[in-house]
Amino acid sequence: MTVWLAGAGVVGHRLSQLCGDEQLSPFDPRHDPFPELVIGDIVVLSLPGRHRGLVEQIGRYGASVITLADDLDDTQQLFDLSELFSSNDASLVVGAGMSPGLSGLLARHLASRLHRIDELHIAMHGAAGPACARVHHRSLSGRSPGYIDGEWKEFHGGSGRELCWFPEPVGAVDCYRAESPLPILLHRAFPEAQRISSRRSATRRDRLTARLPMLRPPHAEGGVGALRVEVRGASSDGTRETYVIGVAELVGSVAAAVIAAMITELKNSGVGRGLVIPGASDIPTNRLLHHTQEYGVRIQEFTGQPSD
Image (cartoon, one colour):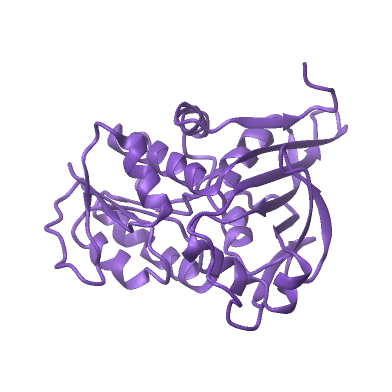
């Protein structure tokens, strides 16, 4: 079994550092000859842009794929490949970064405490590297799907301002609706939820310039990013409950840790075949979170009590 890595950006570099003793074989499908894949191989796609055609090509070889899934239309097209991967006894992991990715795992972790889940609200702050920063920039001018009372609604990116509290040292940040496949993925993982929303942090300048090219080149790597996951529902006695959990880490480091956790479970046959969505009830969420923490991600939960 070979683990192939397509993408030499911040996430790819961090993944290479994390895997250490494990062999990663880098390749660039935009320039290099297509690798000689065999059944059981794992291909990690941490490239910007759309991946549907490349994922289908890989799936025909019987190899599994892990993708970050940062494009709304492309992610929806990946759903069509579930049968291809199932028939070839391979897995297609859609969304294995900070968000989508860790956000779904944390939502499932919190949902396990509830008898009924009603609402999922996710907010994210920061970007991994230049490609991620460009996606963030474009998302504020795109269309933002939201699930409200059992119906899909489409909002303008950059609307819906909400002050979200992230784990320290990030703290309170204004967040807005943005184009993201996350609500679509969460709805597949949590079909019972009646409200699903996703927001990203942004400054006034971010919103005003979202429809223009970036005014200056993005940084080689963003600073400390953060994720906030809020789950609302009811306990078995009908009591309304709200749980909030999150992380404050470098976005690239979190994404790499989630990917490394997925690689571990794929190698151990711990993840099912066909379409795999982090947060779905049929994947080993607790083990994936354990691996992610072993790779250095510190998960923080809001309890309403001061820390010691």
